[in-house]
Length: 420
Image (cartoon, rainbow, N blue to C red; front, side, top):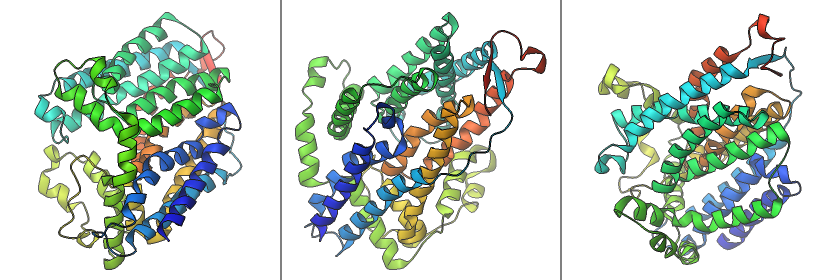
């Protein structure tokens, strides 16, 4: 039963990928990217678990079945559309947009600088305390980059190019040195979607297909790359080229991966104990992310969260650095109905994309910034899109409010008219 279900998962994921290549611009839509993520990250880790004697009986089959429901929900959510409410048009002054972009980039760049100069034993570990605060504010650079790209795609200018160049240097350090996959995806799609929304030009399908194929194979070699760039003093291209991408991918197929194994164990434990959190996982994560223990105290912060001890067994010990995938928290909330989380993500991403295509500057910024978190909701946990949206609401919206054209300036040069 296990292998046929895996092939069903591969078929559904492949259908989303193939359907997303009918037109060049479809590769920017969430179903294509969700299908590619399931196909590249979830499916390859499953075959080795079929005969694993250390897993609970039937646990792998249940996890595969749930993965099929989740990937199908991603595609179905995208298809559920509602009439879009059209409000009065908003207008932004390009000069103010660039001032906001530069300000966000400078503040974010400063905190990325603080992160990059942390001691190695902290920098390359799981962040707690002040490094979490640094990273929280460092994300402002991402918003500055998105605004500058949108302005630059609409009309090339020296200020926009300067901001883009500065932000690219910071992204390069995060991607090339630290091997951050999520930020690499975000960087690519911020550029591609700014060009698409403003110029209606998309990358050729063959180029995209090659990029996805390479990403699927290289995804499982990120650990080797990160070890080279962070543990060796001066890694050279020869060292990087020695990484055997195909062998690493074959190893995952043969031996499985820790992420899906973690998900299998979590799903099995929750099913046995019925310790469903009914979505309170998201509240706990919001408290963890946005309530500073330095201000309220660790004890008070812990009191604000809910505990669900029955969701894991006593001997559950996921490898350091591994994730539990979004399948885990989705199932732990509502059993098989947890797939509705992915349906909701797909639905929201479609609404945002439609608004962006209608010309809304706000949503043209939000969509690419939410794409990577929406993909990471599959590989990490489903809270990421919500946390990212709240972070954007706190910092990006005030910047856009500053850039909004004043009534007297609406008819002036440099005012950009967009639907709200």
